[in-house]
Image 1 (cartoon, rainbow, N blue to C red):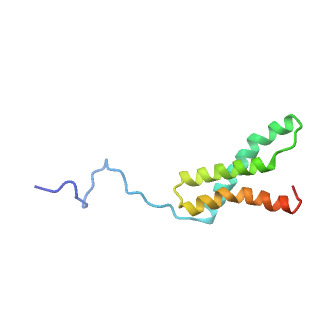
Image 2: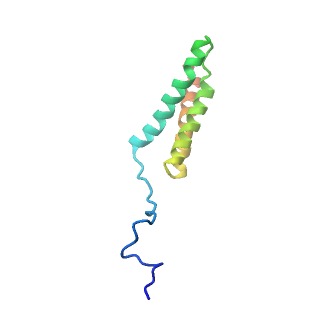
Image 3: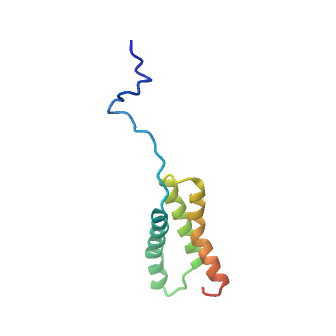
Amino acid sequence: MSDHLNSTTNPPAHTIPEFKVRPVTLTYLLVLQGLPLLGVLALGVPSYALFNQPIPWMEMSLVIGGVAFFLTYLSSYPWRYRIIEGLLAPATWLVLHLAGRI
């Protein structure tokens, strides 16, 4: 009698493939930061411009960081890259705010 539970020679076609960790590349990390940036600005800025109100850059940077964190989570990157992606936009806002640019 064959051991069908531990057979590794020919797995059936209907089995779930083994999970493989996605390799971390700089290009993909930049895309994961750029997409939330463009998406949040494209959805948020026109409403503030329409009503002639100042853009809340701190809140926008926090939302961009949250969306980047979520996308990094969905792409199964390790936790350190999730934290880096989530803090990049708020840290950029903080540096620009302290420098007096915003």
